[in-house]
Length: 218
Image 1 (cartoon, rainbow, N blue to C red):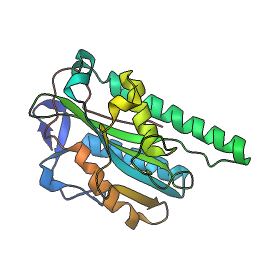
Image 2 (image 1 turned 90 degrees about the vertical axis):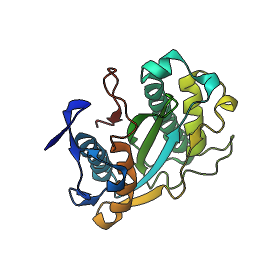
Image 3 (image 1 turned 135 degrees about the vertical axis):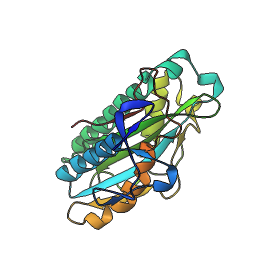
């Protein structure tokens, strides 16, 4: 067992598989505890839903929106998550009111805070939703009632700016959406491999009292 020199409460992971799931070994050592948290979030979603819609998203900040809060806390990402969850809950209530029924959707997630060479923090996230409620992020155009625009709206709310000011800050990487089937573990591997990027040691900053990783606890 090799400890993370920057945070001795953590152990480094070098193997190609974590609990039989593939991970990105080419990104350098990963953090065992982060992999466990990621897997816990995935299993929680699969315990509730036969099919889970999982996707990756990145959030960055331009110079004119950088602030002391962004550099020195995770308050923005916490407000972003709270706002996104509230938007999903509201959408399910609206659906139930309009159609008489609505598929439930508990939002599960994991996030990683990283710091670039320019010293600016950014975030990588994964979300896991009920595939019967949501099966696509939707078109990346403002004004549409879809997951992408709820993400943009949540970021605008977190930053306390207009939606127009966050255009381009929410990035959905290419080929980053997956459908996980509870009874078919073969469908979990591609997502977990892609999501393991969040657990790498590289570009994370330790020692400032801030968490570099978080995940849904229920």
